[in-house]
Image (cartoon, rainbow, N blue to C red; front, side):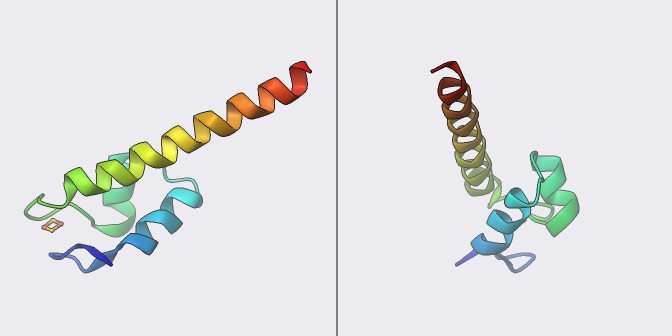
Length: 69
Ligand code: FES
């Protein structure tokens, strides 16, 4: 699915960038040029970023709980 029409950036490219360690909107902009033109896609890109960050926190918490038990 194309997320950024201006720069032809797809959701899987955003997910791949996040999985490779990009962890900010500025990082995504630098890596993919996403949300660097009209900005209409920025809320959706932010949703991907927040979802990734929430999953990372859940993973860290699960690791800590596993270590504590
Ligand atoms: S749709 Fe992404 S910058 Fe325009």
